[in-house]
Image 1 (cartoon, rainbow over the protein chains, first blue to last red):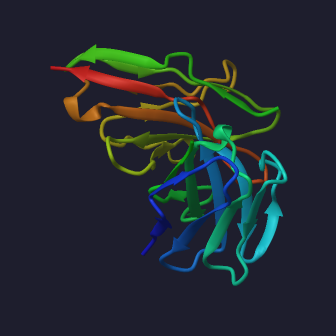
Image 2: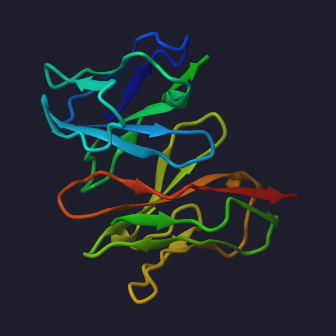
Length: 113
Length: 109
């Protein structure tokens, strides 16, 4: 069945540190999305993979953000030299279960101090 | 530009009262509209989508292209409806979702 796990669930980083956030779809899905959700806001699109191909990275806020999905399954979102404004919940979603429907993971809450 | 606006950040109603969560969108083509819900300590999950025209947990939403709205309605609110509600759209072949900022619905006993 559909499912996606994310790790770690919580991450505290000091400003300037690099972090890596993992998304692990339980069953194979072609599409994988990353979203950033700042406090009090709705999720905002970061990037989209179809299998291993990154087809849209228009939402990545800066070149400090990098995402990969080398084998078309697990994906990693990496943030270099973290800044306080990077503090947010990072959501991974897979799809489509139905046309344009996405199934969201539990998210990783990143706090940059 | 694609945009979703949810004008109410907070909405509080009494149990048994009708509830309406407003959503307006901006999109040049024919988007698909969704409502997602996040209950306390749970993941974001799909509540309903406009193309299915179904009622989920007593909620319905009608797409009004003339007013570019997709308001979520329920005639009799229940305490378990308390949650964050997000309106979202998807357009063209991009498949990415554009979300509103969300409305926190609180149902008072």
